[in-house]
Every structure is written in structure tokens, then in C-alpha cells.
Image 1 (cartoon, helix red, strand yellow):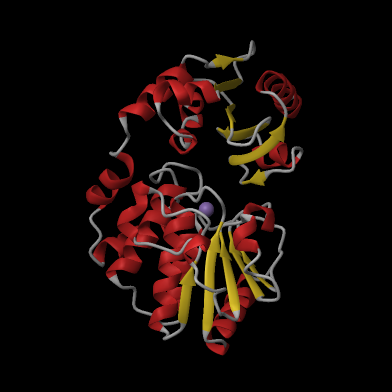
Image 2 (image 1 turned 135 degrees about the horizontal axis):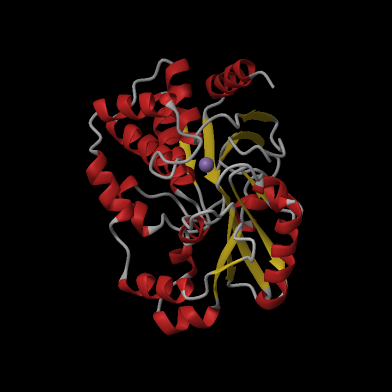
Length: 323
Ligand SMILES: [Mn+2]
């Protein structure tokens, strides 16, 4: 896949059309949120009409980045020519209400998941990029656009969160070079980190305590997992959104190779699963066996069934992959 051609084709589309819709996957993370706002900024600088639409409002921890539109707030179907979908490996990552707005439109797919299914008319997929935010940063450069302070803030959030605060294997000198450029535009890293990582609620801490009490490690010490059941949410007053980084607590256990987080969901008999690998094991391949995907070191999927059945089945699959 020639990266150079994809990015110049994206620029061609941006120059050719006037009106754009930007969206991303359900349960948006910092990269999904930040890259959408950063791309909006870029397109507005180019005097384009831009609407950012997602099924749910901006999660409160990221509220400082701005607001987008939810389908319920639309008085009529948004009028646009091109839909740009960010950070989503396939269209089933988009909620129905958003998908229904995209029928018959030109779809542009900008993503960095190795599992991306190239669903767009135009696909710019770069698994080497630490975050979609890094790709949007490059787009700014190629289009000779000045990054505004708001744009820089959004890009910084995308890269900060998708590299796990510059800790994951997708972090390299390029990531730090970009972060450095963004700080020069006026981003205060302490202020940003406090907004995102210093705002846990007491309810979410109590939920974490319950989840941690479920931690188990396989006999060979290579797999660790923990889970959240719906009744834990009732007990603590926390929500499913509060479980976003729980898998990392299992991941931090010494000697472990694969960490897994299992959670019941709003949908009855549907279990959400997050995988993290510490190195050699490709958890994207494991998630793929269950119609999920992601990155080699961080992936996820959803499986129909009861928690007590799903856990042993998934552990057995991971044991197989480790052999
Ligand atoms: Mn991402």
C-alpha cells in the first residue's frame, strides 16, 4: 500500500468537494475524539462545510475539546458530499443511526488498525502510525495548513491517549517529535493529563476495586484476566464507560504475556472483551477469531454468551495462541 498515493488522493478529495461529515467508532477513545476535532479544524481552515456526527455526546473527560452533533439533534438529514470515517477498522464499528446517514455518499476511510477492511471509496490505512491523530498531523503538513491551538490540543490528545501516555510500542522518536511540535503551539501537557487522567469518580474507583478482586492468572503465569458484571455497576453506581482502562491492571502483572478484560454490556448475553499483549503474542489475530480486531498489542471483540461460558472459551483460545 503506497502511503504517499493515499494521502495525495485524500488531499485531492478535500480540494474537490465542499461539504464533509466526520465520524468515528462507538465508545470513542481519545484518538477517535481528538482526530475528529483536529480534522474538522483543518477542513474549516480550507473553508469547507463540516459536520462532526457521533451517536453519543463527547465523553465528559474530553469535553474540553468541544462538542459534536448527535443524530437526535439533527432537524434534517445533514447535507454533505463526503463522509470521512476515522479510527474504525470496519463499518460495523459505526452505530446504525450514523451509518444510515452515509448511504450513497463518498466514504473516505482514514485509520491505523492493521485489521482495517478498506471499506471506503478511498482508504488511507497506516498501521505504522501511532494514532490517527499522527496521520491528521501529517495531513496538516502536506496541505500546508497552520495548526491552530485547538487543532494542536486535539492532535495531542489523540497521540497521548493512543500511545498510553507515550508508553506503548507504537511510541518512537517521531511520536515525540510531533508531541514536541504541538507543545510549541501552546499545549500544556500537565493541564491535558489532569483533564483526562485526573478525573476518576469515586464510583468508578469502587467499581475498579470490585473488578480487581476478580483477577486471575493462568497456572503457567502467562495469561491474566479480570471481569465486570452488571451487578457491580448497580452496586457502585458506575457505568460501562468507567471500565475503559481496567485491562491494563491485569497487563501490569509481572511475567504476564496476555491480559484480558471481560465485561457484560448493555446488551443481554453479549460480552465485551479487551486483549492486551506485552510483546510477542499477536492479540489482533486472537480477536479476529471472534470477529473482532485491532492492533497486534491491543484488540477487542464482542461475543454472544454468558460470562461464565465465554471466559473459559476465550482463555482456551489464548492458550492455543501461546503454544
Ligand atoms: Mn486509534
